[in-house]
Each structure stands twice: as structure tokens, then as C-alpha cells.
Amino acid sequence: MPTVVVDHTSSSGSTQRLGDAGTSAYTNLTGTTLANGGSSFLAHSNTNGDGRGLDASGEPIVPDQFENLHNELKIANAIKDGAENMLQMPLTDALRMQVESELEAAKNKISAITSTIDTLLQRNLRVRYELDVDEVVKAVLPSLSDRSSKRSRATAYRLIRHSLVDFHSVERLKEQKLDWFLVKSLLRDSKYAVEKEQVIKLIRAIVEIGSEKRRPGAANARGAGAVPLSSAVMRALIAVAESLDDPFRLICLQTLTEILVIDIELMAKTGGIRCLLHALADGPPEISPLLASAFLHIVDCPSTRGYLRPGIDLEMALSGVTDAYGKGSEHVDRMRACTRVVTSMLRTWSGLMYFCIQDKLAIRSLIDGLRIPSLETREVILDMFFDLLNIRAPDWHQAFIAGRRLTIYGKSATSDQKELPPLPEQAQRPQVTVKLIDHFLGLLIQVLCGAGLLDALTCMLEESPVGSNLSRKAVLLMAEILQMSNRVLPLSIAAQIQVAIPLN
Image 1 (cartoon, helix red, strand yellow):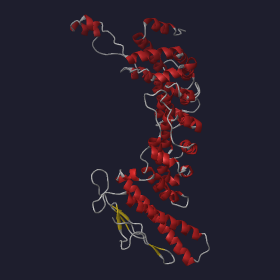
Image 2: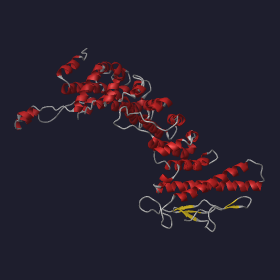
Image 3: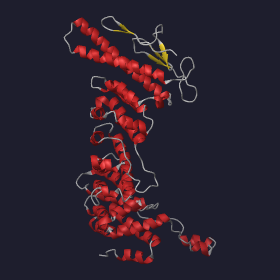
Image 4: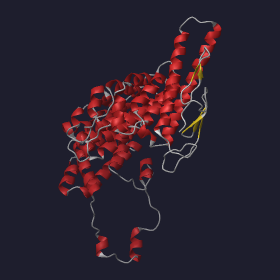
């Protein structure tokens, strides 16, 4: 098998050679041509059909060829370090230009070798199982320094990510003390987006591959796993998620949400729960449903719900509605996004039970928004209750809200009934079938009415001008609630709801 021959001519004119004598300076490595003294790597796509690469002679890839690439990388790093050290010394102009040229060539060679190894790992999935993570990290470690370019650091992070295959490889990576480099890269500004993207991908790969999860059927399985990330890396990731202008904020919030479900203790220790709660209240609307589902998942388990303070933490999702007074009409979109999150939470057993604690304090604060003298807030809350109770508005509701007369022109219904044959007795008295969703809606109506929904609607009708669109919508909501209570609730409870409506 041919070995790699590396000829490097130093500034003094001496030549270094690796490999057997008489071997060509151009050696094929797993379908890649490595040109001596340059940085040109011409990749080929020869495979044997099972994801394992072939070289030019049709033989499968062996780890020795990657060892040759590793040796090449060592030499290039040594040349780079030596050139950087020489530039710190007083040199003549000619010698300085020559050293700078050598340094640039070494950097290009390092970038080309790491890109080649990364491409090989992507094309040949079996090769990564033959690699030693310790050796890979030691080889690319000089490329993670501040002296290297951002693309060189990005390639190094990508190479480390492709070398992770199982839990043991992540554990060996954790022994290499890369936390300082990860934190340094996460704290860079938007000019280093290429580097930050690869760092975040590496962190997500560590969470996905190296996390120790409990079995789904085990006791207290939720949030009781272990994520192999240090507190320093977690706090740097949280800092990116809290930065409003960072382009990677959404993916960092999503990563923290996944860690919350796996290892809630790590999130509580590093302040990640507080970050996600603020994102649930004031964060991007597209991430709010995901955060709400994750927190409901945490609330549903006795061993993890203790990390949330009742009446304080999860109620932050209501702040978009309860704190909307005086913010103007430009806050309407934010309120509607908040009501969609609240609706999704109240449609689950965990969310409904959680909001009912402390004598329905959260639901009462939401209903009290109807008493605020703000047309936008009242209209948004009314639309939320229509959606929450799954009320399908009739065809004439737009005309009714607009104040138009609901007059039907044409033949009377009595004349049409004379011409129709009589209906059978079973069709005249249809039996109403109550589904499981109707049972949940009945419980929801009883909770809302017990929290003062009908009283708030009555107060709003007394304050709103007679005949306004808002008052008609409130009347329509009250009528639909009473009609639904007669259908899904026992008659005794439905009668109590109707009697509780103030008549003055």
C-alpha cells in the first residue's frame, strides 16, 4: 500500500520527507489527490455501495490513510506555529515576506486537510467508527486558536462533530477540555456567523448523542437525564438565546428547550428556565407554542413541577394580555400571539389544572382583562374565548355584529311544512350524543363561569355603548355559552349558571 510522501522546503532550503524512498509525491488518499506543497484536494466519489469509500485501485479505505492525513496536519500546524513565532522576532523585509508566505501556505494547507477529512467522514460513515476522538481533537486544536481564521475554526468544529458516533465518543471528547474554545466562539459577534453555526451544531450533536436519557416507562423519567455540557457552555448558550439581535437566537432557544426536557436540573442550575420563561412571555411568537408544550410536559410530572413556582412562573405567558393596557394598537399582534399560547395551554388537562390553583387566580386575571377600558384588549380576549370553547359562529354572525337586520325574505316556514311529508318520530326528537371533547368543554365552561366570565361580560355590556360591535359580540358569546351549558352540562349546573347572571 502506498504511503504519503510530504516534501516541505523550509526557508533554509532543507527538505523534509516522510514515507518510503521512491514513493511519488502525489499519493491518492481514499479517492483524494494530495498535491505536494500545495493545498489542492480533488475529491472523488468512489464508493462500494454500502457507504464505505474506495481508493483509486478499488480497495476499501483503511485507517492508515487517515493516519497519513493526521501526520500531514501535524506538520502543517508545526510550520504555522514556527512561522508565527518567527514573525515576533526582528527580521529583514525579505525574510519577513518569505515567512509570511510560508505562514499563509501552512494555513491554506491546514484548512484543506481538515476539509478533506470532513468530506471523507461525511461520505464514508463507517470510517468515523475507526477514528480516535482524542487524536482528532489534538490534531485540530491549533486550528481553534484566535490566530486561525474563522473558516478554519468552523472546519475544525465540523470535523469534531462528524467524529462523534456514540455516548463513549462524547465522553472522551468531554475529557479534552474544549469548553474555553466553545465559550469563546459563542461570544463572537455576527461577523463570525460561520464559526458560531458550527459551534451550535456541535453542541446540538453532543446533546443528541451524548445525553443519558431514562427509559420512557421508568419512574420519574421526565427531565431526569444528564446532558454532557458544562455550566460555562450552558451559560454562553443562554447568553446567545437572550440576545435579541443574534441571528442564532431561535435555534439556541430550541436547543435549551430540548435540554429542559432531558435535564431540568442543569437548566435550573444555570438559569435556563428563567430564560425560557422570558422567551415564553416576550420572545418570538413562532417559538412560544414549543415552549408552552415543554413547560406543560414538565408540569405534568410530580418530580419536575417543583422547579416552577406556582402562580409566578408559568403565568408569565399571560403577561402579553394582562399588561397590554396603554400599549396602543401596535401591541395587538403580540396579544393575539399570546392568546394562541394560552388557548393551547388551557386545552390540555395539565394546563387547565395548573391555572386553576390558588382559586383560579390566573384565569381570573385573564377574565378581568374584559373590564379594562380598552377596545383592542376586549376584542382579542373575546376572540380567544370563541376559539377556546370551540364555538363555531353561525352564518349570520357577521351581519349581527355589524348591526344589520336579520330578516328572511321569501316563503314562510309554515307554508313549506305543509308540502313536506311528516318526519318520523325518531327524526323529530334526535338524541344528542355527547363526546369526550364535550365533557372537557363542559368542565371548561364551569371553570370559566366560576371565575366570573359571565359577570365580566355583563359589566362590559353595561359600559359599552348600546348597539356597538363589541357589545353584540359579547352578547353572542354569552348566548353561545348558555346554549352550550344546556347541552353538555347537567341541568342542575346549567340552571345555576343561568341564575348567576345579574339581571340589573
